[in-house]
Image (cartoon, rainbow, N blue to C red; front, side, top):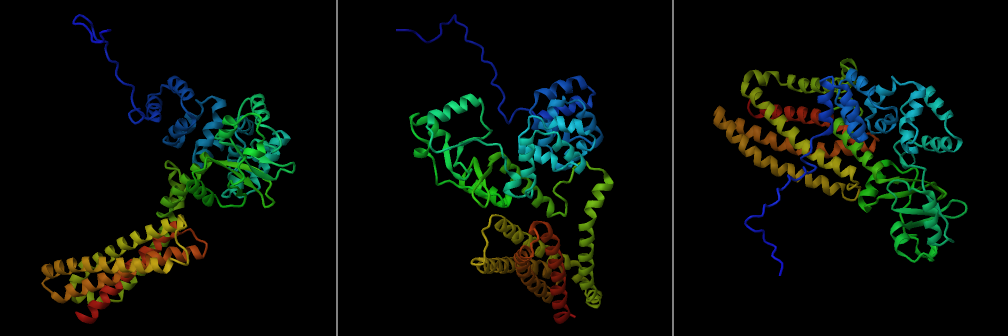
Length: 467
């Protein structure tokens, strides 16, 4: 029998420290920034070559505009295209504005057609036309086809570079074709099947290609129960479809069911990220392509629009207060307690607003369930209003020794929380009816309503019952 236990004289092998897990590894952009700030440009140049384009893009986005241009010069020309694709629109614009037409053309070499379309769409018309004129006829035709679609549709999102096969061939012929081709498009989980007129018929899954007998006909194993996406479908619906069906890729067809391209999961992730950014920034009145380190004048100009809207609504709330100046003079406690009612209403309204905007984005709200949802939010507002009204009324009585004041602020809080719930529901739903993105304009309107109504209800009740 073999003794697996070490003898007393044996030396146990020294355990090497485990390699760091992905969460323990430092952010590559942090190292690049440190090297750049230390003016160690040779090391920066070497490090940029070794890192993924996404890491390089992140490194560029966290630099100031001046440093960004300097760091861009450290990249190899063959890196430009891959990095430009990964950059946010605003940062990409600052770099492409300083690139010549020949440099831009060179940066598009080797990129996927849909990525080239993203770059060309952000360029000045004269530069874009020059880039298109230098492309091969087939590449130019494909690119112009994508550019003919709105950017936020499946057609604008798709990649026209795809593999197609016919039904009457065997899997062995398909395998030989793939070996001869030497590569497949990224994220290929199936091959599209079309007829002689390029009408979409179905897909051959790669799993079937690899596991079925090679003499099997494509027509015998292809999947005809597959989801094809119309080229005019909005990109948000495309993203929802990918999430709901766990898709890796999907064919895109025109109205005549001709195959025109395919959409892959990496494109959909970009759409989801952009929509999340747009919703988050839009609620603060900031454009989705806002550059964190953009110049002061440009940033101030972009933000002034919503600041102006907010100023108008603030004057509206102040006008409401001004109508009760005598009540405020006679009972100073009203001015002290007044912000509580408006603040609680604004908070409650924003909670409802977040739920409704999310429901709209996920297409969970329709005409069949909207009324029931409004009733539910009103009931929540009533319940929370009663709970917090009793607390605030008690504290107000203990503070000022005026039981009537406690009753008035309690009643005002119940009413305002219900009004806030109604506004949190009705504002985004109304904006959607007018074709306005609820995530962009709802917050400002909701704040104006909850502030004005909170002041109005509280001061009106106080005027009637206390003054």
